[in-house]
Image (cartoon, rainbow, N blue to C red; front, side, top):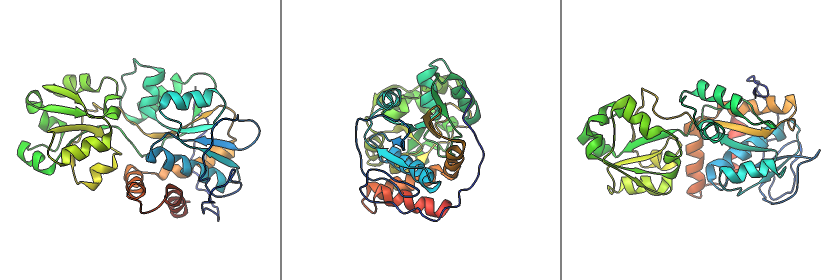
Length: 304
């Protein structure tokens, strides 16, 4: 399915402050409440979020951008994994959810082998089932990555996957769930770099795995680029020149016909969202410096 609209039109709106604990937002503001059930009709655009800080932040950015354009929005938090989010869309309980291009592509086309941003987006647009649409993706990219501590990187002389490849057969990879979700990544590491790890061990959440790595408990960690702990702990993310890892750009997935052309144009402000922006906001929220609503409102105020 072709994407619904494009363009990088900046939204000029004066009101972006989050409105605390309300059921609906109209004209401006970001809903901080959550609810379950109900259905989408001719009322507000219902923006859903997974149960992660990053997903909630992006959902609030989408809701805030729509609200700044005069569109009433409602926010539903804690939708769970991708299957839960798709079920919420299919059940007409939400109108729009933040997703990642590569993971969504592999959901609808498990045989897809493309990894570059534009190729992944084009393949995703073609693979979407009837009734679902996407608009343009943001630069924020949560693709898989191999990570070392600075000390390990120095010892191994590695700043890229190519540098690490000759040593892979002697190393254990601790792979987070999000890293493992990149279908075919390990096969591509082998075919593109000749890198086959001696052992691949599940590491649970990205945050748990990178903290373990920072403590020196594991030699190589497979995580994702938007894992905020990577930036906090000053770990070394190995560059992937050959494209072994699938692009995972932030993209809005929505029910076809729910958004107007103006709504879609209003989402263009999120095209300024970078991986660094998202990880920095998530780190501040995770550390209790500010709420996700305040972080989203501040970002929108700066970029609208």
